[in-house]
Image (tube, rainbow, N blue to C red; front, side, top):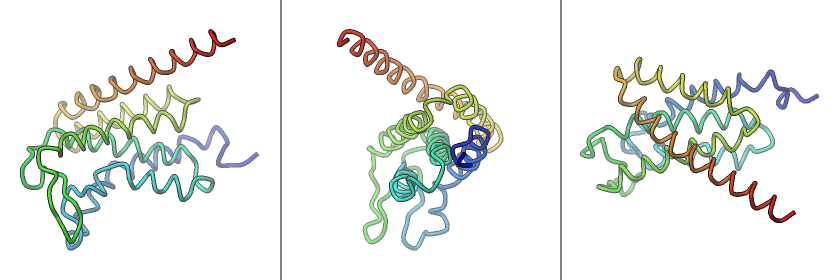
Length: 180
């Protein structure tokens, strides 16, 4: 029995991943010489995606799923920021140009993809995954953002993603049944 795949070890990497994902987008604040705050690199699912591609067989999928979820929660809160100055998404050095009016679209799409990929990586543990994601989103909203609106925003994005995934899975099940 491999420890990474053991059922009891799954919540730990997920919890570590979600915690890291909550704070990973703001790592650009430590790299302001090459990245602007709200960098297109850190305020996206690029970093967990690269980790998944590079370390696919060496880290638990639940850890990467947690990173996706944490980033999605952070980005859902960032959806509420004004789209001026630091509220916009920026390209890295040497350009450091903003995406302008496309910034909110970038944030919402990446938050939705983060939720989607988090659910996709751990399909057999949806109940604790969804519960954990929602509890962390609530805690992040109340404790970090000091408001409920980020939680509501996350809930709306999550609901749309969950509904689309449900419809797609249902269609696949119907297609399999009719093909038999």
